[in-house]
Amino acid sequence: MAGTLTLLVLADPTAPQLGLLGRLPEETRIAVGDCAEAFQSAAPEGDVILCWFAARALLEQVFRMAPRVRWVHSSAAGVDTLLFPALVASPAPLTNSRGLFSAPLGEFALAAILFFAKGLRRMAGSQAAGNWDPFDPELVAGKTLGIVGCGDIGHAVAQRAHALGMKILAVRRRPELCREDPLMHAVFPPEARREMLVASDYVVAAAPLTPETRGLIGEAELRAMKPSAVLINIGRGPVIDELALVRALEERWIRGAALDVFQQEPLPAGHPFYRLENLLLSPHCADHTPGWMDRAMEFFLENFERFRQGEPLRNIVDKTLGY
Figure (cartoon, rainbow, N blue to C red):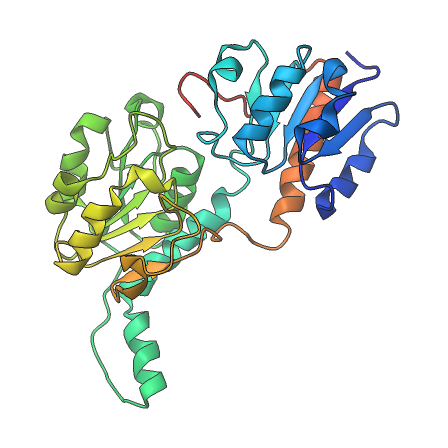
């Protein structure tokens, strides 16, 4: 497949990572823009679309303008906000950045567990107030961690929690894919998630957003959890019913929660989440470690070379499943 290829890059033209595209073969034709008009001349010859954190509306417009496109890449890991019927039906494969952000998200989940186990908010508050306030922090070793969605991110959480001596349970659409995983004590199908939730001291939601996972953790699931349990969401916001979670935190159905993702982002001013002292709130930046966008572009460049050489692409998304 080597030869002249036309790459359509849906991005803010000032994004610094676009400079890395200079590593592509010099014969590659590159068109960059953040509006459909920028692609009027190049789109009819377009072979590849790179959606560099662009909105679905722009991707849908450019996709219609580019009948020859043979591959679409999303720089983000989640593609639920990008899928539209024509893309799903197209033979062009869709790839994403799955796995690139798993390590930092695994670390954030661990930080959230320790935040509650060790009473870090109480410690910081006492220090700021000049109070000497001894108490008994919790031992994490021996506690049970339930993971909802055990893909790359969920597995990264499991690895780190296992190192702390935690017992790992998981819910996965296809439990057989990780039943032989030595990190897992037990794996449940989604319809048996209540059994896992009842047994868990900490629950990490790391599932992609699909019609099946939207609202997967709602009032019934939150009421099934231990009053001492903590819920952590590092997957997609709508996997958890936020109205039910607000009630759960206000009425102490559970001890607390840590959220990196939300139904609406940015979280609107005045949202109840801002005032809850038993909630740790991260503004969807837990995986924004230094160089994270460079790593996303590096991955695309590696996949572009595979495409150019006719080799199998990495991270192909099942467009019908949404991940």
